[in-house]
Amino acid sequence: MYQGNIAVPEQLRTIEDAEFLIESGECPVPPREILDRIAGKWAIFIIVATARAPRRFTELERLIEGISRRMLTLTLRNLERDGLLERTVYPTVPPKVEYRATDMALELYEAMLTLTNWSRKYSSAVAEARRRYDERQAAECDRL
Image 1 (tube, rainbow, N blue to C red):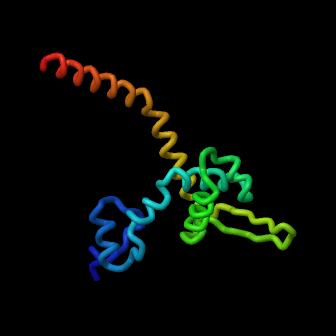
Image 2 (cartoon, rainbow, N blue to C red; image 1 turned 180 degrees about the horizontal axis):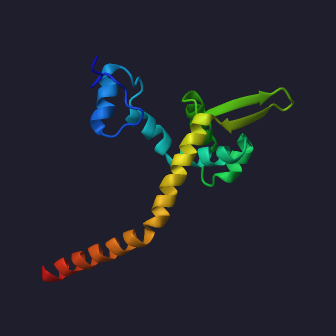
């Protein structure tokens, strides 16, 4: 039997692939919703910090400059809910709570490293493109 549009692609190659998975019910949480969750700067900092080692709340608070306790709490809860963090409570006084990146988060961390390496690779090209663009814009303003 022909499996054309029935087979689920292992990796999405086009927007149409993603739309098909959403419409067919194979993708119960839309990719956009997941990407919105992990694209926030606090989520990225937390994933990077916990990918290196399990971290306590106060450690994360010290490591992530500018994050409020409330935002840290909310982001940790959301990442735990989405399966990116595992929260462990130790029965001590006061209670010790640790957050560890899950295997899924570690895979995401590897993808973030790929993006970071891409940005380093093309940094000079982006700087040059910006310079050319700014020159064209300045020339247009001079003509007006």
